[in-house]
Each structure stands twice: as structure tokens, then as C-alpha cells.
Amino acid sequence: MRAFQTARGLRVDAVCGPQTWGALVEAGYRLGDRLLYVRTPMQRGDDVAELQRRLSALGFDPGRIDAIFGPDTRRALEEFQRNAGLPPDGICGPATLRELERLSARADVDHPVSSVRERLTLNPRSLPELRVVVGDLGGAATLAAATARSLRELGAAVVVLGDADESVQAAVANSHGADAYVGLLLTSGRGVVTYYASAGFVSAGGHALACRLCSALEEVPGLTIDPPTGMRLTVLRETRMPAVLCELGPSDVVVPASARVARQVTRAVEAWAAAPVDP
Image 1: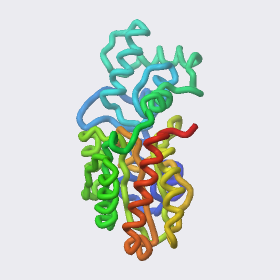
Image 2: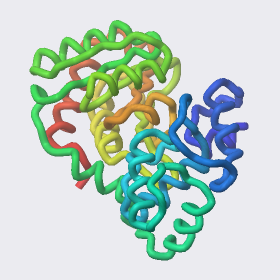
Image 3: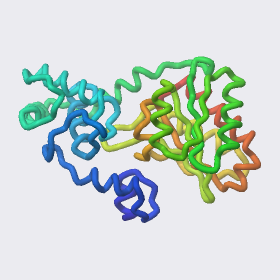
Image 4: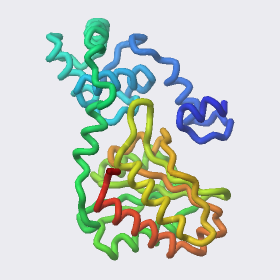
């Protein structure tokens, strides 16, 4: 169980909770096992991720490779079908798979369009130009409020969320058209800042923001932070903007230093806005 959780970018706790069970189900699908198309609830699985990787490598942008068959993936698939002389029905069936297999040798796996697109859409800005969602995902209500105040003082538009459901937080952040999402979670151990990464895709904006947050938070006395880590946690996977989750600890250090931590988070977000991707 621990090995599976590590490989899938999940929290390693050897407990088969909802996220781990969902990942186990998704891991059972291979491209070609079923028809892929937009439905409710959206189809999720390793087959969807493989389809997204192949489309992206061929220059058809499905958005981030998140293993969720949504509108962006459908549009990319329809565009591929048009170019391949197939009916653009947005359904990945046998005929579409045959064309994908035939053209895979031409795929640019080193420069998938989904990664290039994210880099091109992230332009330097100032804090007053940003919409930031700050989410409390457990025990961090005071810190989330302090962070929101600090960001607002420098002109950012901020929404604070307190729902512990990561999917709900991601949906609200998406509905607000946020430019960045910063999740906060108190932990009893060492801290870590995570960003979205999967096989074949790394959120360039999320990675850059995570690195800046780690550097800033290391300056808080008593706060221990591990290096930034790419993961596939629900809130990172389902947000459509650069997103990070700051798991901060130990809690007996973080809570008394909430004002200082909030200022460091603001400082990191401001630096990221000015340079939103790594060189």
C-alpha cells in the first residue's frame, strides 16, 4: 500500500481511504478498455491520462494531464479526429485509437503541448492583478485569515475557503477564475509544500510557487520544511490554475507564528507573480 501511494503521488499512510481507493480503481484501466467521452460524472483513469499524454505529444492540447476526461480533453480529441480525417465526435473508440497508434511515432514526447501552454499563459504580474484563493484544509483557519489579510493589504483579490472537501475547494477556486490557489493544512510533523505533477506533466507554475513558498517559510524560526514535492492530491489535480498545498508543522510553532507565516506566504506569492515559472 505504501509503495502504491508513493508511486501515485498520494499521502503515504498505508490506509486505503477515498483517494487511495479511487487511485486503485483508476489504475485498473488501460487505453482501449472502454469508450472514452464526456459524461457525468466525468470518466477518470489511467486510460484517460494515456490519451491525454498522446494528444499532448501530438500537439493537441487537452489541458493538464489529470486523468479526467473533461471538456478540454474532448476539444483536443475532436481536433485530432478532424486532422486525422475521422468524424469529430469526441469519443475515443477503436478507429481513433488506431490513428493514435499510427501517429505516435511522430509524437514530440519531450515537449508536450500541455506543458508548453501553461508556461506561455503565465505572465509576470503584480499582486493587485491577482485573484488568489486561500483554502483551510484542516486546522488552519487562523492562518488562512491572516494570509488573506496580508495579501489584501498589498492589493490582491482574495477568497478564503474553509470546506475540508478538496474537490469542493477546487471547484470553487475554478468558478472564481483564480490565478493561484494556496491550500493550508496544519500537521504535527515536518512541513512540506506540494504542487501538481503526474507522469508526463508537471505544473510549471505550481512548481515555481512551491519553491518560492519553501524558501520563504524556511525563514520562520522553528518551522521545518521538506523540499517541494510533486503530488496528485485531489485539490492539486482538480484545480485549473497553479496550485500548492502547504502542510505546515509542527502546529505548536505555526499557530503562535501565524502573522509571521502569513507575511512569508504573501512575500512568496508576490515573488511568484513577478516570475511565475522557473527560468
